[in-house]
Length: 202
Length: 202
Image 1 (tube, rainbow over the protein chains, first blue to last red):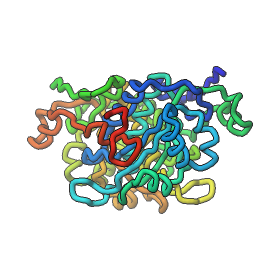
Image 2 (image 1 turned 90 degrees about the horizontal axis):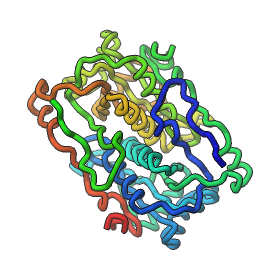
Image 3 (image 1 turned 30 degrees about the horizontal axis):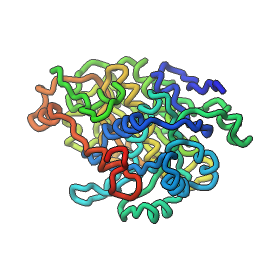
C-alpha cells in the first residue's frame, strides 16, 4: 500500500510537485472541514486574466449522502466506479465572459486550471490527493445545480486520502500501481521554432 | 522595495501559494538555466486529461536578444512596456485535440493552466515571480514560430526576480503597490445550488 509514485524528475522539483498524482484508490477517511476550507482558499489566490477569477466550484462531502450522490451522478460511469469512495467530490466551472463588460474571456478555462492546480498543491501539502476528471456529464450538472448560461462545467475533482489499490478492480489497480510517465521536456519546450527543442533541453 | 503582497488569506494556506503574485516590476538579474529547467520540469508533471499533456512552451531569454525581441513582439503593447524588463519570457500553447485519435480535447486550455500554475509554484519556491498575460498577439506568434493548426497560443509568461516598482510608470507602480484582492470564497464555492454558498463558507 505504500506505493512510490513520486515523479521520476530529470531536474530537481519541489516536493509538493513531485508527490502529486491522481489516484483511483481513495480511503474512506473524511477530510476535515478546515482542510477543505484551506484548499479552496488556496484556489482563491490563483492568478487570472484581469483578476476575473472565472472559477466556481460545487462541492459535496460524503457525510451528506444525498448531496454526494447528486454530484456523483454528474460523472461518467467509469469515473463513478472509483470516485464514489472519495470523501469529497467537486465540480470545476468556468465563466466564459468577463463580468466587467460581458466580452468573451479567452482564458476562462485556463484560469480555472490555474485555480485547480493551486488547490491541488495546497491539498498535497495537507496529505491529501486530488484526482481531476474530464469524464463528466455537464448537462446533468447544469440541470441539477441550475447552472446559468455562460458557465461551462469543465472538470470534476475527487479529493481525499490515499486508499489501498488492492481493493480496486484489476484495470484501475494496474493504473494506480504503474509508474508515472511524461513526454520529455525537449518535446515540450521550444525556442527558435515550433517542434525544435529549446537549448535548455537540447 | 520590500512590498508585502502576501495573500490576506481567510484560512491558512501554504507559503508558496500565499507568496505568489504577478508583478510588473522585474529586476534585470538573469535566471540560472538550472532554475529554468526545473520550472519547466515541474510543469511536465502536472495532471492532464488522458495524460495528454496538451501544453507546449516557447521560451526566450534576454541573454539572446534577438529571440527575446521576437517573443516580446507577440505581446500587446501595454504588456511589452513592462515585460521587456523580465529576463525570461515564454508563450503557453495548448493542443486542441487528443494525439491518440484526433478527437477534440475539451480540457486542453484548462490543462495548460494546470501546467503553468505548477510551473509558477516551482518558480516561487526558487525566489522567482511569474506574471502571466492574456494580452498577446496569437497570430503573430503563429507566424513567427510556424505554429501548426490545432494549437492555440493562450498566454505569455514573464519570469524573473522582483524589481523596484518605483521604476515603473505611475499606473503600473500603483498596481504593483496595491494590496491583492479576491472575491470571498462564499461567492465561489457552492454546494446545494448555483450561487448559494457552501456550508463550508456560510
